[in-house]
Image (tube, rainbow, N blue to C red; front, side):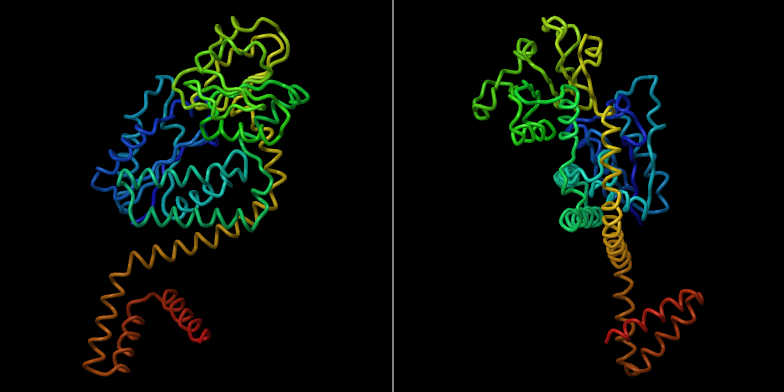
Length: 394
């Protein structure tokens, strides 16, 4: 038995391709349940974010090829991929220790486009919770995710990896500030401020205390309204574009929140503006870049800024990897012990039965001689060295 993984991420696919693999929560649940219904699959968890789609599986080693194939088929049945995109080309497959290590790297932010960003940890927790709600996760994946989350938390507290708050949200704000020179007294419109990424942008702008913030809501609601924040109805967003300096969109919408023709019609002046699209699939029609004095950024455009951050955090990443390695080993030991626990029970009962018949000394002698006869020399040497370690500890 082992853990398997099908992965697509920013490392294997650009934004356009990742957009095609975007799934709603309902689609994710349906996909998990469909995969879990296969006899050879014992557990399944799907992790879906802007930068990755991953399917974690647990099943028999001998069924691995079939497990991958069945999971891949169910995944593609939930997607509507364009004919020009061969979805299988972008998938990566991992099993056993490599699959476990990958999850640990993901949860800690070490596999993120922005190393050390901590939004992914919450997304990993939510993926586990969704699988639990769908009843597709059990002892092994639950424990694997628990170890990964615990390791990520330790990295946050014992290294500087996440001390400097660098995330998709902060990079988006930096891009806007660099394009305009400053955000002081600039008007920033956030579409999707109630979501995770949009909410993070909103909180960062509030703490900066520089820009004048405008946010959209589906229905007029004044719970966020203040001297610093103006709430507008989502349906009126185009009417508010003209005075805006920065427009940031980060929704889970399956369609554009801002289309090129309507943006062009709404803008009366050609002063500098920045459009930032933080959504997958995209929220903003990329053709807005055709407008004069307009800057446009999407998730793929943040690669250079992310690389600079990643270089600065190289030393802390090394320290984080040491922590991850320790937790990976702990989980591997747990999994081996859990897998063979029933065999240990049989051995214990056998030794106890012989002890009653022949005495404890003879029972243990028979046990060790049986081990000697059953094991290969290198296995026996490892076992005897382990016994010596235990003896030295007492």
